[in-house]
Image (tube, rainbow, N blue to C red; front, side, top):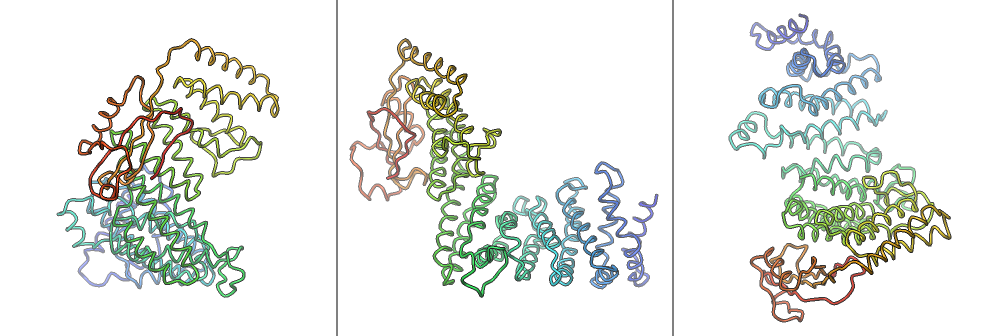
Length: 553
């Protein structure tokens, strides 16, 4: 009854035409707004009154003027009380955005709620700057940034996903609230002053998600924040405080920012964020900033080239990852895997090693899956040293805590895959290495007995079981008509059982119906490699495969 009555009062005040409602709104605001906010936080999400309470809160904030906000902020007796209120209201806003109270098809109500939240965020951003900068309160700033980014990236504001009529109606009434929010976030960031270093690299992921939003003016305004983050870490001291004047005591690198940027970019682009426009904008804006900076120029340009190259490969990967052509998916994964190895990002390299292994297993390419896992095992030592986070494989081997534990687990899986792929000679070789460890390092005779029995079975299989000798094929993809992860590159493929050159050739050409099979076996000139055509050079390769091979021309 009280909630219904309060709702009726707010409705009457909104439509009142008998004079000013300033004092009425002030009285209600000072008396019950905090109670409404706290009740909204405490109430069960399934409660039937929650929608009414949220509507009342939105109505209050909607009818409050700048003077009302000023009165309300100043009525708190201490800064602690004001801080508690800001934490509460930002929590409520973020929760309303992440877990909407109103049904998705209530477009008008949701957009009204969003416009009121944006209006409030603008006022509260000034409050945080005025009250919690000199007496710096990191949590207030941090909560504001996270709330604002959550608001900006919510599905109901992604206008490009709507019909043109719906998009026009929203823009004509509310404008593009993503752009307005992005400008507010940018303003808050550049008002942080010497405290920016406290938010690097923790805010990199949130700001990256914001800039990946497909709105060009938003991107142009917010991409420069990344260069500023680079400077913050570059000029920071070992204790994390900015000290630009003392050049002998600066960090002189931005490795934490770079690592976080690469990790978050991989996750977000694979999840559907980002496009070619972002790649080009990021490259042009960041290169311009780096080239004009005398101290960071070399490191900055290197970083921009790494991120641009990574974006190109991630966008390709996202395009082909659901492709029916599994060879394309594998080749694209190898392309990313090699890139991460080149830039020495072991944790990302291992992530794509596991993805490639899973792709091989989907195709029953067990020997290739084994060779792929060997790439991970080669990064580990036969020691009991704790595993660093960069070398872990938490999804596949969650309980392995030392180098030895993980390497043994990998070896056992590799042996199983070689067994399934009928490459028992390779399985024996891996067993022998484990046997040496059991005999001279761990003295684990139970495992030693098991390994020797497996080796015995493998030798029996080698002698008694009939196996078709696999054929290997060298395939070169010449010309710019191929996807970039194939252009002018050579791969070695192992054919399927009893597959001969003619069968493999037909299978390859079926994947690229516009390609031409080259008749000469020599490497072509630039008239072919730089052309827009698709030319395939294919021939037998006579050797025993000893490693997972990808040769780049």
